[in-house]
Structure formats: C-alpha cells, structure tokens
Picture 1 (cartoon, rainbow, N blue to C red):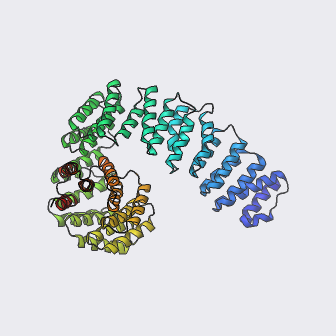
Picture 2 (picture 1 turned 135 degrees about the vertical axis):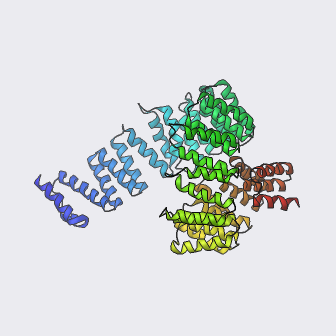
Length: 553
C-alpha cells in the first residue's frame, strides 16, 4: 500500500514526462501506473496518449470499464479511428453489452462506414430486451451522420428484410428512401407499413409528404382517406388541414381546424399551431382569435410569445399603433428585446424614421451588450427608407469597433450589394465564411450574387450547394440553387427546384423567380398564376414588380 501511495505521489509531483522515473515494480503497480498516466495525459489535453494508454491497459486486463474509458477519452479528443478501435475492444471483452454494441455501430456510422455497421445494427435489433419497433423508429436518426443517403437506404433495407412483419421496419425503409430521393420505394414501403398498421398516422403522413412533390391535391386526398377511417387521430387531421392549406383550399382547411379545436378545446399547443398556420395564409381574424385565447389562458406557458405574434399580425395589416400596443405589453423575458426592435420598425412605418432611430438609441442604452442587434435594426430601417448609403456608413463605423462580428459583416455585405459595391460584398462575405465557416447564408448570399449577375456560375453552384449542405431545408437557399440552374440554362431543372422552394415557402421573390422560369419555358398561364398569388401577399415587392414589367413589356 505504501509503495502505491509513493508511486501516486511521485507521478503527481514529477508530471507526465517525469513519470518515466517512477517505474512500476509489480503487475498491480503497472496497472495503477498506466491508469495514472492515462488520467494525467487526459487532464493535460493529450487525448491520443491517454486513450492509447487506456486501450493497451484494457487489452491486457480485459476490463470493459477501462475499454469504455478509452472510448470516452478518444471521443473527447475527436479521435474517431482510435475511439472505434477502443469500442471494438470493449465489445470483444463484453460481447453481451448492448451499450458496447451500440457505441461500435454509432462510431462506424460517424466515420461513414455504414455497410460495416450493418451487422452490428442487426445484432443490436435482435438483442434480447431491445424494443425492435422503437429501434427501427430511431435507425434513420442514427444514420443521419452519414451524408451518403443511398448507402443508408441500402443498410436499412437489409435490416428491415429480417422483420417483414413489422410496420416500423417498413416505415424506416420508407423514411430512408425519402431521404435518398427514391420516391417509388418510399411510397411502396409507406403503403406496406399502413397495410400492417392502418391506424398509425406516420406512414400516411410520410406518403402524403412524398406525394406532395407531385401534387398537393394527391397529398391532401391521401390524408383525407386516412382521417375518414381514423376520425379521432389528432396528428392525422392536423396534417390533413396543413395539406389543404398547401393546396390553397383554405375554407376546407378551416373546417378541419375548427374540428380539431372543438375536440381539443383546452389544447394550447393546438391553438398555437392553428394560429400560426392562419397567420401564414393571411387569415388574420382566425390567427388573432387564437393568439388572444392563449394570452388569456391561465395555464399557457408563453403569453408574451402570443402577444409578440399579435403584434406581427397587426403589422401585417399595417395597424402600426395596435402593433406597438401589443409590443409594449412585453416588458421582460426572451421576447422583450425583439419586441423593442419591432416597435422601432412600426414607428418607422408610420413615416417617423427619425423618431424610430431615436427610439432605438434610447432603448439600446437600456440593453448593454446588445449594441450589434440595435445597429443592424437601425441599418434595416435606413434600407427600408432607401437610405442605403447611410446604412452602409453606419455599419462600416460599427465594424471598426468589431471587425469580425458575423451579423455586422453579413449586413454590411448585403448593403454593399444594394450600392453595387460588389468587391465589398465579396470581401466581407469571404471574411464571414472565414470567421464562421458554418454560416449557411454567407455561402448562399455570395453564390446568389454571382448567379444574379450571371457570372462565375461554377463557383456560384459550389457556394450554394455548400449552403444547402449546412441548411438543407432553407427555402431561400433552394431558391438560389434554382436560380443558378436557370443561369446555367437548365430551365426544366430550375423550374422543379424553384417549385419545391415556392411550395415550401410562397415568398414573393421566390415567386418572381419561378414565374420567370415558367415564362421562359412557355408556360405563361402558370407564370401569371404564380405572380398573381405573389402579388396578393406582397404587392409592393420590388423584385416581383420589376420581373413582371421586364418580361411583359
């Protein structure tokens, strides 16, 4: 015992390099020595030495706890290959451990070896005590770390083939197929899952999601059939109502929302969802009614959030004083600062730009540490008033104090574009990418700028594709990809991409782009339909108005 204490003391005093002088004298001392060496290396940030030391010790002692520690330390150091080696050793030592099996499978996926992970996943799903159905429902989440969606689908198909009687196995395959853009397989597997378990909403909702790519009407019909057979299904009816909104059948959607609210009168989450969807389709009366219900609901967790949305509803109807009243009721919490910024916007919309700027200056003094947000908000007010040079100068001054601040760099670049200072735009967006490599909108803005000017299209595509990799569901980035395709001359591909963006988010500028591509394809009635829809929601949108005027002259 004394020898061990002296060994510990010697290692602690001499440090990692001095530890070589405190050589162990017995096997027990050797194990203790290696444990200490591993801990000290880990504490000093030498994760490679620490994890290798633990791994060697685990192999020598056959102790699964040491192998698990080797995995933990390798993961801390982001040493994927070493972590995988340690995990496999852990599983060899403790083959009955579902934790070890799960870690091996997860690490194989993380290093993009999904085919090698498949037998481990199969063993995991067949392990006694493991809930197979739940396992299949989580399998695609596990595989999400691998960007090769086709290989993910192949693995899920192999796994599911072992359990053809399980609805979740077919559903997991349908999910993987949808992610891999294999719509035919996705539909077939979703339908098979629904045959096995007809009361389950998930397969019907996934089938509708895939059908929506072809036709919003087909998606709505699939969900209508499901709701007719399962009238008590809250998720199914809500999905049906949303599909009706997507198919522009607003009166029918409202009936479904009314039925949901009648069946669930105290469900605040549902009330909120109905209110938000109503706002999205500009049904302001329904949106306001539901948000007011939340404000007065005694048990609703976020009444200020409802007040904030009520302010937005008023703004969209150009009821500026009413919007300010709602925002003024929010005095603290997470919505307080955004409410102050929206108040400034409402004041400016009343034609009081200077008052709005003074309000921002006064409020900024009450929120120390939030200067950047107030500067960006003031610049937006100036841009909205077509005072782009003043906004540019304001942001330039702010950047002198914080030259690498991401929000300032992004806003400054976009303002530079309005002044046709494209060199400034590119310089600042590239700097932003350097400062914040995961800033999807920086890549998108630069790529879109090239496409808009019909230049450097190869680079534009790479930038937009990088943005999509970082934010795959962003409709504005999908729109940028469609615009790149248009500039490259791929009109049909551009139309498909832009339609996907517009269906997901019927924004006026996306509508302007989609309409232009349809017009060039000779589908002029379709182009006019999209433009008219966009004009209803944004009659003053500059891009939309200029596009229509240019093409119809």
